[in-house]
Image (cartoon, rainbow over all chains, first blue to last red; front, side, top):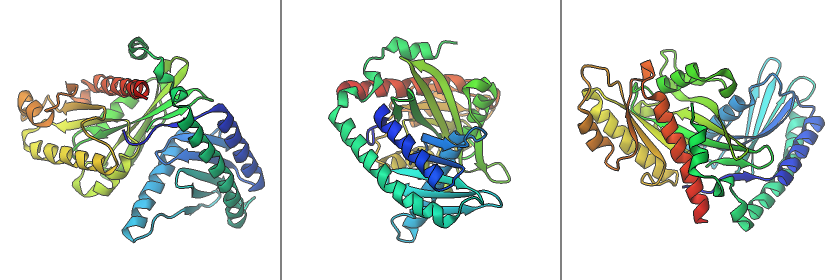
Length: 161
Length: 198
């Protein structure tokens, strides 16, 4: 298989949530979420109740993947920031440390300048957390998967009608 | 590349439906979406052209249940089957945990099946995967059509490594869930196996 799974522990998960919470407040954003490049939602913060975050995550990753493809075609490594402007809401998408995607949704209560400024700072903080997380996963491989203990029966049970 | 979250106790896996254009990949997802209960599925997202040809991908998130207290979620994707969308197909394979190949049984689509399967192998390789090792399930779709090729012939040509395979009619739902279960099982077994090796 190509590369190990992305694994998230409680400690880092809480740290990430705190960082996202801070960003939401400081950038006056409606919603902030973090997605891995394959489209898995890592965490979301803000007014997420009426939003389909799973679909948002998948489409964001698709968007980044497509834009990354465009970048390569013209000889760029990647486009690290995407911005979509709507009538009311805007979406700011940025790649953090070539690993994860940070998405900020905001309206007239904020501005692109403010969001860009805060996202830059947040990117550094998230990078530090992910670097730590990766080291931790490498150090504790035996605890890296709940699958070490599952049985064939557990898998069968998932498919009982 | 699966995503395991110990904090929210979730496991996420990515399954990609691959195959030639108009073979029934989207129909598979559509049938699953129609039959699953609302609490186990998310929205079916289709990025399609005006003539309902897949342009980028279809996406359907499913929650299958718990394993050892971990919510097990599968994200199903299709690729655009038409030959000229190859760049998109390559992107969608990124991070894949298992592949379903939906072959078109019509005899005149045999070349398209072979071309698509070769394309899959190449794109997997370019994403750092080995076709021989990745969880893989074959579905021979459109078995109800009068011009369907001989099953044995299809097996010989398209499934020489004898992965689990099914005779399907996706429009009627035949073998759609069997295919899904088979690939989900293979993905989970592979995750278990790769943990044991560490």
